[in-house]
Image (cartoon, rainbow, N blue to C red; front, side, top):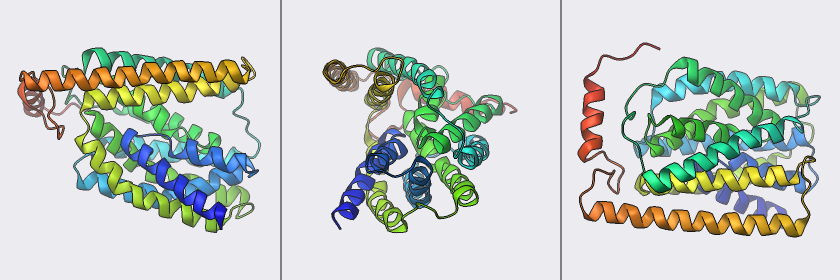
Length: 320
C-alpha cells in the first residue's frame, strides 16, 4: 500500500513538472521504477501505459487553455509515434548506455543556450509565427520518440528545447504541443511493448496509480503554463535541462564522479538556476511596468509581438 501511495505522489509531481515545463514525467517515473528493481523494459512499459491517460488529460487541459498548435502536434507526433514503436520493440536487446552521454552533451548545450537566451534577452519575437517545417519536425519526432521508448524518457527533453530554440512558437504552445503529441508517442510505445514483452513485469496497479496522480496534476499544470511569463518559463526549462543532463553525464562511465563532487556540482548549478529565474522575474516585471513590448501575464501578444504575429498571419502560408 505504501508503494502505491508513493507511486501516486510521484505520478502527480511528475505530471505537474511535465505539464508545466514540457518534460520530465518519463524520466522521473522511470527512475523510481528502476530504483526499486523493475527491469528497464517493464519500467518503460509501465510508464508509457500510464502516460496514455496522463498525456490525454494533459493535452485536453492544454487545449482548453489555448496552449496547443495542432499543426505542430501532427507534424511531430506522427513520426514520434513511429520512433517510439521502434524503440519499444527493440528495447529488449538495444542498449542506450553509450548513446546517453552523447545525447546528454547535446541537450546540455541546448539547456545552457536556453537559460542564457531567455534570462538575458527574453522572448525573441523576430521568428514568432513563422511555420515549422516537416523537414525539421519529422526527424526531431523520430529521434525523440525512439529515445523516449528505449531510454524510459526523452520526448520532452528532446522536443521542448529544440522547439524553443527555433523561436517560432511561444513557450506555452511549445509545452502544450509537446505534451499533447506525447499521447501518440505513448500509445505507439505501449503497442510496441505489448508486442515485445507482453504483460511480463508490468504491474497494472502501478499503472493505475501513476495515471491517477498525473490526472490530478494535468489541469493544474496547464493553468500554470498559461500564466507563467515566457521569459521566466524559458529560464526554468533551461535549468531543468541542465540539471537533468549534468546528472546523466556525472553518473556515466565517462566521468563516474564521486558523490561529494557530484553533489557540489548540483548545488552550484541549482544556485545559478535560481538566480537566473529570479533575474528573469525581475526583468519581466520591470518591462511590464514601463510598457515594454513583452508578452503579458496570460502570454497574449501585445505591442511589437502583436504586430509581428499580425504580419505573420497576413503572409501566405509557407508550404511544408
